[in-house]
Amino acid sequence: MSETELIVEPGRQDIVMSRVFNADRATVFAALTDAEALSQWWGALDGGTNVERHDPRPGGTWRFVNRDKDGNEYAFQGVFHDVVPDERIVQTMEFLGMPGHVLLETATLEEVEGGTRYTSVSVFQSVEDRDGMVAAGMEHGARADMEKLAELVEKKG
Image (tube, rainbow, N blue to C red; front, side, top):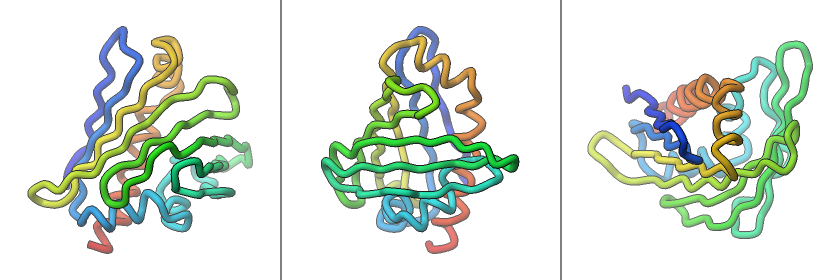
């Protein structure tokens, strides 16, 4: 099983995350773009994720709401800028608890020995925005999401 790698270099505005999944690119891409699949792995909170809107095509929008075990809600939204089946997704993401702080994420899928390498590069508007996300526990949540995504796609092959 692959581990999730995160690169967070001091003084930069980006976070690079990668992982190799023991599944083909089509299976991983489907889990990244299918609303039902997303609700199973996206969001590390115990109360689950409600995918309210998800239209993975250029110009399409998305909105997810995570709930913690106490019922608190955390909403996220974004816009798709580029979607190439089995290869790449370019989208924005905004946490509605801090509106106006939007990041641009490019996720790519590459065939490698043993499966598919997923790499995402998230570019924040400032170093302070990026560091604030890291301080809020982003790394723990991202690793938990990748674990759940691995369980989902590796069952399907």
